[in-house]
Image (cartoon, rainbow, N blue to C red; front, side):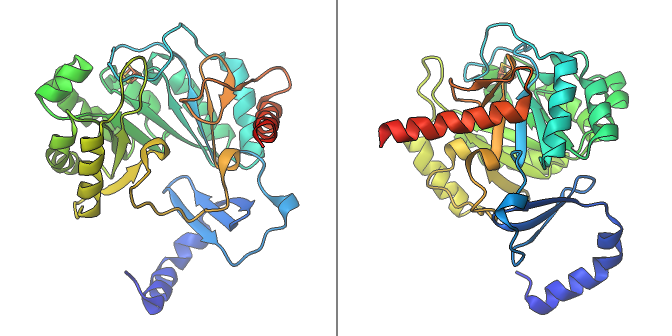
Length: 327
Ligand code: SF4
């Protein structure tokens, strides 16, 4: 860990680059947050006390399910299965609103976001007309060279689903692992990328192998997604949870680890923005246009002609009302 002098040296060396960046600023309860979408750099001035009426109103990060359609049929999938897809023009309006209200980035998912035909145009719009960072999560099997050309330079980060390696992956995803491995050449040509790894009793024993492979492939982050109970599946079992906790505590591997909020209990996490909670920190928009507190929630608020910020306020109000009912 760098001491104070090391930090001053690092800042001094990078000062020229730091001041030339067009930072997006986000005042909030933890201080003044600066973000550079080109590099993914975050700086938090936690000694700056931002008045409450200046705090950003939009969530820091919003995940958006563009479509419920997918080319695969994974057993642990939590995406709803009824056909639904977001309207492109509505999306543009919501993105403008989120951007203007201090959101830093949107993460597209689904379903499979590559099934959303206008994904490249959407990413281009965000890149040129907003200061939001775009990421998306993909199984990568639909990527082609022409999609790479259309997406290159417009996406800040890609997340590729890879649960287990070899036969385990093939059993869960129903796709050849060799073909996934080949697709990483296309992934790398778009943006930096990380691996999303659903952890359960089947995939847990292959974590070390998967990390080594991810490192060889050039991944910069490994996101652990302890399997959640959905559609009759019980989720990660107790033995795998205990094994995962032990594994994480002794981890000294080559890639940065992160963990989904839904499965983080009992794992060491570092959150510098401790006061930015709930809808200030994160929201999800599903493929029917409902804003929710998480993708696993069944309840939400429909985004109507009043826009996404009004739906977020409504959802906040609903949450406060139900807390009062419980009190
Ligand atoms: S690839 Fe993702 S969205 Fe598609 S079925 Fe599998 S888990 Fe669900």
